[in-house]
Image (cartoon, rainbow, N blue to C red):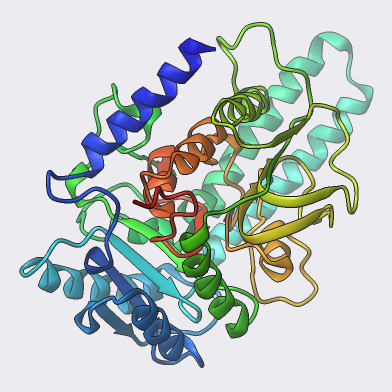
Length: 413
């Protein structure tokens, strides 16, 4: 137990060292820049409202003109979002420190892969036909031949994946975190140099040019206003309630050499244990079933897995609550009325902040629960700073929704 606590405190000490200057600790309003879309209804009004409530200087507003749709092409992102934002931020940097960007309701959520050319479409059809043929052969193949056929299917599937350029899809916010970095690979993720787990690894991008990015977005403008108001109100009293963690298995005897879902399931156990030691009420479920409907009262924090795009209405959320569900595409849309993904539904049900991927992220791209929740609860860092140090990858699929300045457990003097 003492070893675990010292591990968490080392995380916090390291975080303060990498994110702070002697004159500044938690993220400030003056270091926060807000991005609104002139072409989207409510975007500018919400941006100005947030800036007024948080006393963010008027000069920290960037107004772009782009599509109001949630999805945009790479070319639209580059010309209508990335370039004007980069230019404006560089101008501000001549006068002040900029650490965080806030995208507001109406700014596109995700970047699509480029469309296939005619020849690429033809090649894709041929490859899919080959897979169908091999799968038919598998049904009657002798045992000694099946492994070779399955290997060939895997090879073709990898070729299809590369042809579709799926790895070039990304969350707009995740790309904006690197808006000050001129050249970085777009085919897949970029390791986040601020992630605590990568502190001993050499980074190929300039850490000083990485920005925090958070999003003030929701299914409706009224929910965005509620997020802003709740965050500010709870900072005055502190977030109270219970932390709920929904693991699927019992904590393993050894935490070494874990990967994938096993690693994240163990991380849920470690997060729960850390918060218990920090004297926060915790309920940990380590059964295969998820929390049932109407079973989680006074929910302040939550993390669990795996109900794909199907929110389970288990929670009575506290004002200012924060949580995320580890599953693919849970932030694929915030606007489609019939979508039952966790980010959209949690915002509708009352949380102040959540996290989710816009496409398939792979589990190792999620923020590590054992870092995110204990560090957030310590109260020294804002929501955006806590997210940054617990997030393994940038230029990828993950989105933070919430007020980046929010400190639900801040220690008031």
